[in-house]
Image 1 (cartoon, one colour):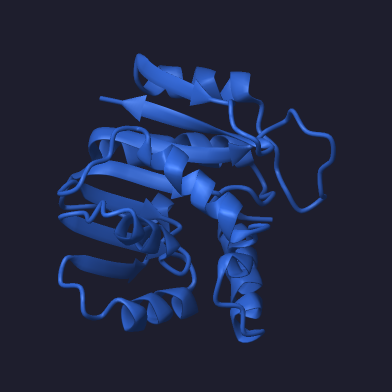
Image 2 (cartoon, one colour):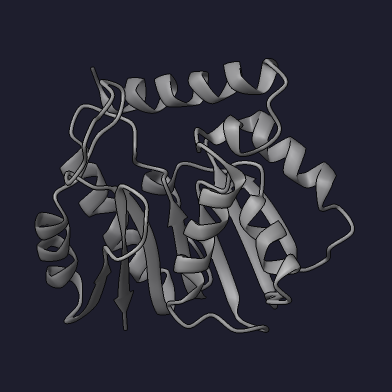
Length: 204
């Protein structure tokens, strides 16, 4: 399977969920809103404060923006990108009153940015198995780090689990730390919260 076929398969999966009427955490494959909010909390603990600019990779239905607003961490600029056109259209309709918010249908690996963001976030965008998860994630991390001024926060399913599903890809935290460490000397890995995953911070 080629890279384009991989991403088409992922896009089709989310389209099916959207057409089934899913408009919450279930649309992007999370188990509960509480676990999704915990992931967002961990991402923000990289050091996010109000007035920062954020690029949200794999923004889904824009739930990170809802979390930021609920916790009074309103970004100066928020840009969300996602593979799924239906998600992007839904986000544009939902947040059309916010001038500092922009959504695009984009593939991170093919996207180029004419601006830098204080922080780049990615939550669960590479949890599904594709032809070469390790290679794709390394390229994605490099692109996200290039687009940031302060840091990148992202999470991955951990290989330290009691169970797994065939559709999911679980990453070795040690290997991910090694990949991140080649991009920047300033890396923190968080594996200290009650989910079968981990969060990486890459700082400038």
